[in-house]
Image (tube, rainbow, N blue to C red; front, side, top):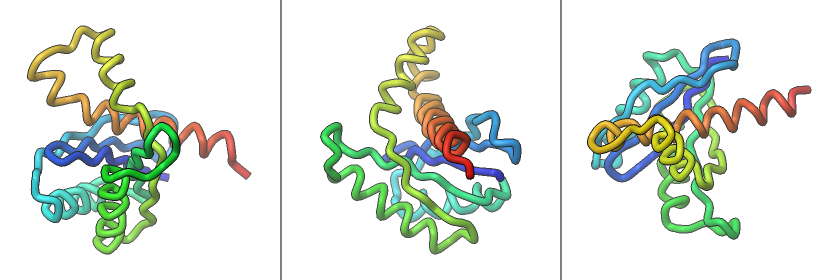
Length: 140
């Protein structure tokens, strides 16, 4: 199944996709868009272009499991996105993915403008890898 993950942000939104084999999550792009509705529309267009069959939106719960303002905004994003695409849109717990993305970029010595440009796509890859791991471990 082709699955797309979304790391939604107020200015930049990372997108990653895996192929039908569900083996490798690859970064697709970062959508630079501050307008909430335009970001949703651009994400929907990408989903159609990539022929995705499922979308996973990062759901940044607080470390104690509560739902904060950021998670609520991501929930709204996923609800609105689901109105524009013909596939399921799911929320996926993404606690610490941006921190992990920064750690990966530290290891690769990616700094400055380049880092800012790719960190959200790397976070989307981490979200998708986590989701794929869950799917593989819970296959029936």
